[in-house]
Image 1 (cartoon, rainbow over the protein chains, first blue to last red):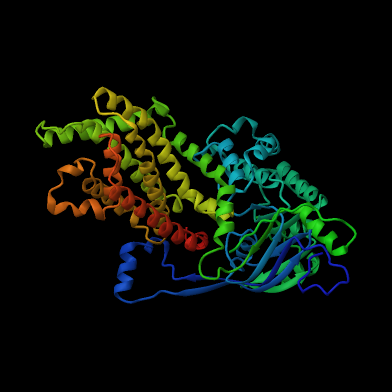
Image 2 (image 1 turned 30 degrees about the vertical axis):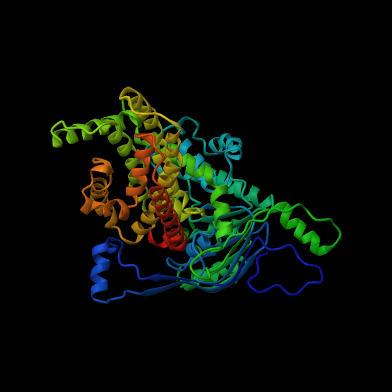
Length: 272
Length: 302
């Protein structure tokens, strides 16, 4: 069970949660010009005019929660609600502006943009680089490599540049790398609908297996069916704020009403 | 954000608090705390320890980059030797024409040694400049010390430099340059150059995130730097009015000491050695601290 409030004092100290998020806010200080304007000339010109572009985007506002070990936390919300930002902060990729995140365990990420694969490199090179970047040693990777390739079902393609891969093959390898990194905590952001129906089923089963082995999963998805099937608790974010937290059926129903989506709308249910 | 990683032996059982700690240690030996940085810098000890722990990533990335650079070429990795040789040949012809065939003693050995050393530094900086902005997906999806990206570019440059030492040795012997134990002074000078290149590389890699124009200016800046460094000319030939160039240019003292040790087999001047070490330390400290203090922003800027 995930809990949104601080745990009550107990006579014996309980095991620490896998993830503890304490009053976390994340603000993007976008003194950032549009990417194309991040130039020396643009900056000098702004400095000369003493024009300071500061735009604050509060992506996450005062979110607190705990994710106990062995549970699946689903995060739902409209586009721009702060879901990906919160997950990236849990992974240590984005720093919180205020508050504190404590993580007990090895984290593996499967985020919206893949695992950082370089399409010029072969599948094999990407698996090794991704694993080393994630903190595994070369020995650990050598032990895991066969398992990763077998799970992705890409044995014949591992020595080919990834630019030759289809989107499905790319996603399968990314999923396989993420789940085979021996993670204690797996963070998945809108990456459930990888591969064909066969692989989708396989990835669902693998996640169930990880849960049964007391691994912790944080899952961001717009697919409500996946949420109902996998999550123990659901966090609903809206404009960075916690709008709801609790059992999946209740929170999903409230979310769908808020979004004016019919509960039995097949499109809203799918992983897209 | 600060990260601490804890590895402990399981405690004795019975006590509930100890059991909870035992659970944490047995199942989750990694413990990370992510908080806002106090003064822009994460705790340097854990950061550097994490950097060292992930060094295999930088080595593998360097190896992959080198392979990719020569993938599909007829000569493959032979380019590691062919490139510097052709480069030296081109510059030798240029200098010989400009000097109307009037060569000071050891001119070719000097040119070769200096140009290889110069490219050790400039290649590291050039390749590092895009290392962070080009590592977008990796930066957005994986938490690791970002400094590994420019460090891998420095490694590539060092690997490319190594075969040139053999070429230098052959030319040194063939052109009858003097030998002696003083040539060993080239090693500390090479370390100075690598340290300086590392500092400058991480500085440029971070600066490129904020000023995307830098990459366009860089080739011109590096070209001018080549001309004002004692590469195509020797330190002894500098007119009195331009001696200051050797002091204000970080590569001035390093390349002068490098040539004194390698080409003349004499003990390099103490001023050159100390000044070179000073530039290397300043570059490492400024570049390193600037990079580390900014790297948490990279995920929102790349």
